Length: 167
Image 1 (cartoon, helix red, strand yellow):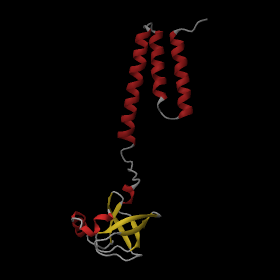
Image 2 (image 1 turned 90 degrees about the vertical axis):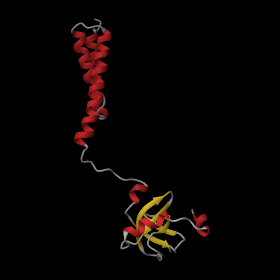
Image 3 (image 1 turned 30 degrees about the vertical axis):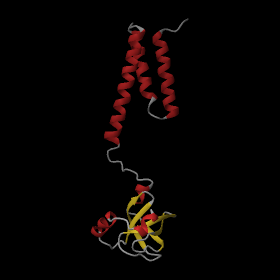
Image 4 (image 1 turned 60 degrees about the vertical axis):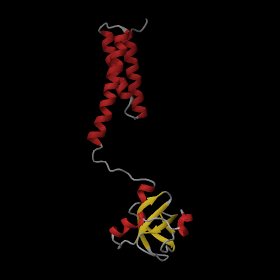
C-alpha cells in the first residue's frame, strides 16, 4: 500500500511535533501545524503546489506571529541585562594606583585592573570611586560624593602634551 499525500503530510506533522518536544525551541511546532494544514488540503484534493503553498504560508505566519507575540506580550516587562563595559557604569571600584590631576592611575573593578582618570580631582590609593563613563579602555571615575555637574565638564577638556601619551 502506497501512502497518499495527506498521510505523508500527517507523518511530517507528527515528526515535527516530536522534534518540538525533544528540542523545545518553540520553532518546529509551527512547521508541524503547517504540515497538518497541508495534510488537510491534500485530503480535500488540492494539488501538491497548493499543499506546499499552504504549508509555507501557515508555518511562516505562525512563526512570525509567535515571535511578535512573545516579544510584545510576554517580554515587555523583561529587564535588559547589561554585560561587558555597559555593566560597569555606576559600579563601585577601588583605586589601586593613585589618580593624580592630569595623570591617570589604575582602579580595580570586578577583580580586573583598569586604567582610569578622575573626574573629581586627585584620588589616593584605596579610595572607593564610582565609574561614570568609559572611553575605549579607560574609565572615568569620581568620588561618590562629587557632584555630577563637575564630572560632565572635565572629560571635554583638551589633552596637554604631558599626558597625551597616556591614552
